[in-house]
Structure formats: C-alpha cells, structure tokens
Length: 203
Image (cartoon, rainbow, N blue to C red; front, side, top):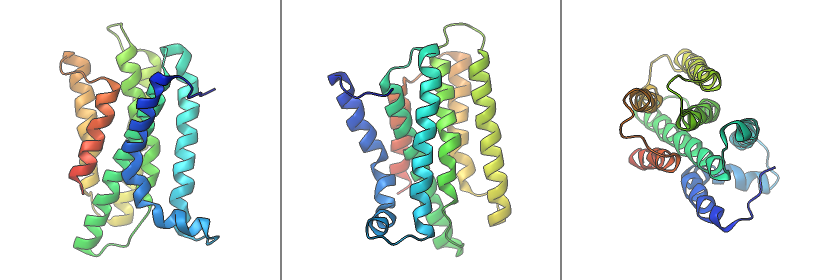
C-alpha cells in the first residue's frame, strides 16, 4: 500500500504536483464541467488520467519489492508521465493551429507508454549486473510496442508522421546511450525534471 507519512516524502510529493501542474491546468475546463455535472466527451481526458494513475499504482506495486523502489519512484513516475503528455498536448495544439487539424484527445493515451518508459529506466538504474534482466527487457519491449501502436494509429488518423515522434526518441536515445556508456546517468529525480523542462520549452 502506498503511504505518504514520512517527512522525506514531502518534497517529492510537492515536486510531483509541480511536474503535473501544466497537465492539470490543461484539464481545468474538463474538471470544472465535471464538477458542475456536465458530462461530455471532454471528460475522457480525466478518465484516461485516472486510468493512468491506476496503472502507475499497479506497476509500482508489482516492481516495488523486486527492485527495492521507494515511494519517490512512484511520485517522480507520475510527474514524468504528466510532463511528457503535456508536451504532446502542446504539439497537437501547434499542429491544429498551423494546419487546421481536428482537435483530439489522443495524446492522453500516451500516459501508458511514458509510464512504461519511466519504469524501464528505473529498473535499469537498479540493475547492478552487466546484462539487462528479463523484467527490464519486458518493460522496454512493452514500451516500444505501445509507442509504435499509438503512433501508427495517430499516423492513420492525422495522415502524417508528426513531431511527437521526436519526444519519445529523445528519451529512448538517452536511455540507450547511458545504459551502454554508463556516462551522464541521471537519477530518477533528474530524469523526471528533464521532461518538465521539455514541457516548458513546448509552451
């Protein structure tokens, strides 16, 4: 069970809120409508974010004992996924403004692969052996497959291979480089904040 009782978790909890703030701000209209009892398709992002949070909890609970994860891993994972989805939010907004594309909430589905990406990196950091263990390999494979499936659907929907392809490639490239060369390895806190800084550059 996830408990936030120790003082050492207060700062990561605050950081998690900051990392997630831009995405929460983007959903404010949907939240306000839901509070007023107005339920439309605009509430789908709320449902997807709740589903993403549940997926985080399940994944964290499964990996917690095997990799000795603390609560900080869960908090930074939530913040990382939220920041990455926020980047896609702004990319879709740019595409719509520039090319008149139909607005879509499709980017919220990327919560799943970004969550898998974060935990792939987290398990990779905890692995002291030279070889990648089966759990990390499974997570990385699931990450690639889920990204590929969503991007394929998105290409069919929008008719182009759009800019969002570059976002996961940045993180994939970094993970690949750091895992091979063991240089410039970021801890999970720094890894999460990198996604936040990228989300601000997308504003």
